[in-house]
Length: 254
Image 1 (cartoon, one colour):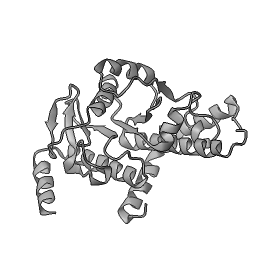
Image 2 (cartoon, helix red, strand yellow):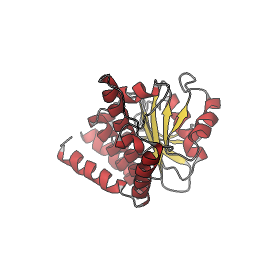
Image 3 (cartoon, one colour):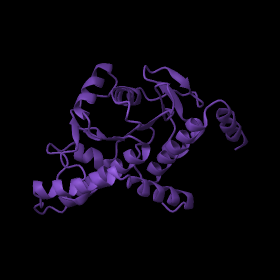
């Protein structure tokens, strides 16, 4: 414990308060994901842009499980993949760099990018018709969800442009045969989007497992519901969602 404390104090002494607060928030997001079972052991990644003039972002150290991640263990990297700060010394997942740097570079207003390999997310990502409009949660993404075809492990830099092109100006992406990705102007928005997309995928698999004919909501109704969610995003209702989860995290009530 004393070593970890010393490491945190040493880091805080050489970074801005704004960066430290970003580290705290991103570490909280990883802790929430661990408790919500949105993890694939050490193999997925969340990133958050570092406040300031330089195009740096924070991401998890390769080899740490989400429940181990703390503000002082996050790695700071630039858009070209150069490690700026690596307290753990294990580097980052190369696929994480390829995916996250592509979006951070193309969309400066996008400060947070979250990527998961949950069973439900992969299950829907493997379905030809993708996310179905069968739940209120899925309607959050009516005509607001992009798809990217699987090209193999995301290690090739030339895939970056195709990811960015497929995502466009949307904040949710299904990586076919792979998993889910959401983003936002801040971490709270990206987390809110991931929560709804994950829940929609869980609901879809549950509905399909019953074997009954599914009730697909008409386009007009799905659009009506989606606009309500859009207004919630505009009015930053996702902050209520995030704050409630942080209170649960503090109480260890998840």
